[in-house]
Image (cartoon, rainbow, N blue to C red; front, side, top):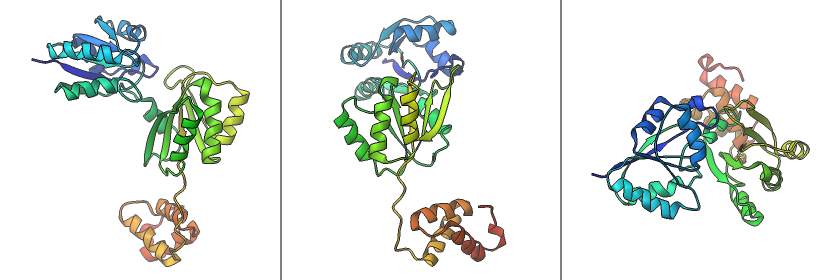
Length: 284
């Protein structure tokens, strides 16, 4: 009988964030496929786990992927981990999962920390809709093409970036997007954790004067929705009330419809409140 592949999330900095289930899984499998065995060894030592490991990273994934698959098909259970966070997200682990899926191997996920979601949660920007954009290309033409495609994206965008490329990336984002709000998170869950809420223009100036250190997650404000200038005031009030009937707070609905139609938020709110009655009273 074939074994299983376990996709195990590991801490993004603080080793105390390893879940009990993740530790139990790492103890139970026959071997571990690790992005960097030296990094994973520190984690295993912290929890007194002794397991054989094989390295599995971008430059050996074809050769090692087939070897790992063969061992699983022969009945061994394998856990795949990355250096930090969830495997397979901007990570070669996705190729192993695909290979196992193509060969009928059962894959079990053991969720853990994610730098992208952690940074989004503390960004102060909208979390209602977001797009994970991963790493931008080191080639500027490809990077600008990616940013231009994302320029009209209204959802909040999440990017990963290395410190030596950060300033160039921020300048290119400012050129492609204009001056939007951005939150830069680094060293999350570590001793020198930093969450920097600013704008792209201010970020360019700050990091040119203060050389960046550590890996960054960039949370970038999405494009504002195109305003519906054709919507009259009464129609806009109706749109607001409909949004409220769907469960949105009246004040939040007023802000959203004001952005969409261009009508003043306060006027929309007061008109909607008058039609809805005292039960809908909220602070703006």
